[in-house]
Length: 374
Image (cartoon, rainbow, N blue to C red):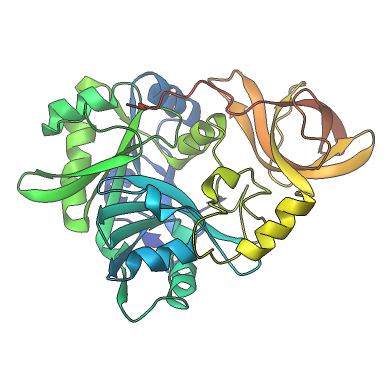
């Protein structure tokens, strides 16, 4: 995230004016003007953990995949097993190139047999669409719905009760990594239950023209119920405590799924294989040369992205994410280390402004996750 410089090329979600009116500190995130915070990152982080934070994540992309060969196409193009899906269910997968390097991490929503929506990272929308298009058969239609769709995330222990009261949604039967279709004020919405922050949480997808009414209902009418607008700063510290990888940090086109510890999203044995499988077979046989680990600082400084990691005076890796974890109560981070240095309890050092600061490899997540598993 970089502080905004005046530019006419930056995109805005349909909620931009709402963020400005709430005092949001707007920054350039992946080419979008997005709120980094409103009142403060730590306060918004803690409010989400204890009540209900509301996030605009409309910069995310949506790609519609439909047709008689959609299942077979996605089964070959993505790493996870599409057979795990059923109508109303979501799975996480990686989109890799032929070298098994990660183009993006995505969520796949099955609306109906041979009818899917892919939710992709904002910075990768065009690249993902191109990577998918190179393999798509004539029987399948790809449609980029990103410019016409909005998404608002509602995260925290009070999220379910607040959504049921404000919108009349019946959510108790909606379990983790599932979604449902509903309507509010006569227009259709999709509601999914995920929890990128580590809390129980939901996402409301709608057409752009309906997003302001949903936002106002959550922020204005929801305030007395326990909602608070939260920016991408808190979303980042929340996901870091939850141990979740972020594209552009822990995963990118120089990492494989196995490097990032995402082998659980790779179905090596599924029929027909998938793009990048041969390279992953080779890497599995040899073992990844580096591993993604969580660490806790043992001294005051915070480790930031790109800081080098040392062990016994030898550079063994690099920090990919680092911050103070308000709920964890410590300065924490994620980073890659050479194979052999990933064991829990391994003492490492992070070089911060020329000084090597002690740290320790610790388990992920850094907090107890509160997803509703059903």
